Amino acid sequence: MSTLARCVFVSLILLIMHPRLYADSALPERGVDVIFRGVISEIGKASFPDVPEPSKAIIVTVHDVISKAPLVHLAPNDRITVQVKNISRFKVGDEVVFFATGWIVGQGLAVKEVHHSTLPSDQMESVGSVDVNIKQQLGKQKDQALLHRINSARLAFVGRVLSVKPAPEDVANESFEADSSHSYESEHDPEWKDALVSITNLLKGKTNTQEVVVRFPGSPDIAWRNAPKLREGQEATFIFAKGQEPSAATTFAYGQGQLPTYTAPSQQEVLGKDVGDHLLQLLSK
Image (cartoon, rainbow, N blue to C red):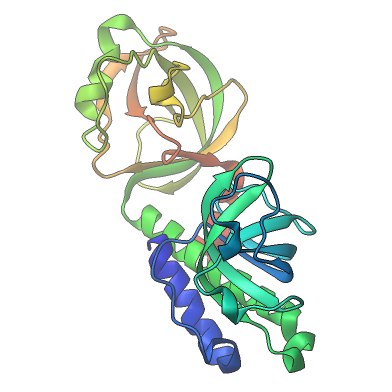
């Protein structure tokens, strides 16, 4: 489910549980990077210099960060600048839940409003439950998205990296041919490396070996900045989609025989071990 669809879903849930919060608001129209609750401190100002059109902005003191993208750095008590759609709808002291998209990162953080809900003064005692409800719904949506990935995966497992070495030069190019789910920029050498991974928990699919090879770009080049960088001893969750067929059995760099080799060019294939542990719980229900 896309960020936009998830945001709309959460908004609908809140509309049902807290109809007064949405009585005068439209549903989100674009993607959302952060959801937070805070109190409006100043109107027509920005919290740091060089923010365009500060007269259209407000400063919010954050009380709770409900959800955020990994690259958004925001915490309770931070002062954040929000460029709002209609500044006349806000006043100092309002407690507001903002759905926002990232805008400026400099001496501070500035975001653009996608949607907001002002909490009525007579419902301040239920503020905590509003935050919890949003977080619960976001958690359910993340679980559903994770289960969907597992259901559509060829192979998924929790594993431990036993060792890492450069991929043999004569087989490294097979990664390009075997993986039809990604495109590569040939002018940027990925410097393929092979990780020998021991499967500790099989989540989906079949394999005839207890160990597999995970081939990943070891290059620090900007083209591969989002690629996983596996290291010896690392425990992780590996998910390979149906389009990601293993390459023909090749001699592993360590000379340990023929093992299926999977390509992991992005962090979509390599997630934290905690994701696998959580998946085991979801799959057991």
